[in-house]
Length: 384
Image (cartoon, rainbow, N blue to C red; front, side):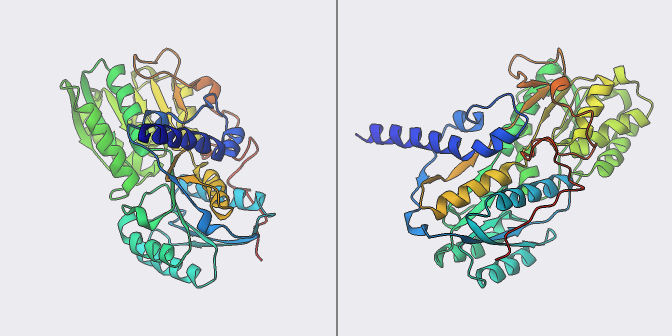
């Protein structure tokens, strides 16, 4: 009996997760459109949350407490949330957004202010997970459902649903590709994102778990970059000065700093055919550099369309529909021609994914259609 119930629950979870991704999957440039593999591979279970107690008659007032727009990914993610809110004007009467500029204390204050404005639901992209737990839990206790995006609070009681693209899976797949592409041997440099930010720390930990399985791989250096192209170039330039052509591979958790790393090698006089294998998705500039210089490359986007998917979850909750406790949004694995490995295959080839016609600062996987431009993006948000 219990096994039948669990099987039904898991099947329902899969169907609901797929339904919630309909908009993002349709709008993204995607070749793999099945259920996210991070969901399929998860060895645990994903409970469905009964949201009947949150059901309300719309239109709704939505509060969005954003961590910041400090990098290009965060800007694009924010646009995705706004894009989805504008597209659901028939269901959303007022959309109130705040920006904490990366300050967790300010974000706590922002959330309290939103709670005082009679919001029906709170969406949070936490600047840091732990400091936000108490205020998010307080909102839940006051009957305001919370959807967390990108960073997962530790306490289940502080949110209804968490929307992610899986930092651990991104890191394990890209690290596995690099290790296998090097035949399990050589010297590598690790370029994680922002020190202390949970996505960067989780990705770094997951990548190290992979590299630890290859005793002949040596990590020469690990340098945080703040997910900045300029910092990526500066940091990598200093590492190149120390190690030069002893560097056999570079693992970057995003193309934001990965693009800077490529430019550092080129600036140091490396010819395109001397560039080592590298990883790093998200930024179109990274894909362009890989295409133009033809070095072995694996890119995985931490797709900012999670913002669009989060708004689908928001509306499901307020309509009293069951939602998954964790919703994984699919990412694409992009690999240069001839560089697939035994464990990591491409969803789409680099040449078919890169946008040579688009701006360098375009963040891929945004889900807002082929005409999206972050510089000219503008939507008419519901203002009540």
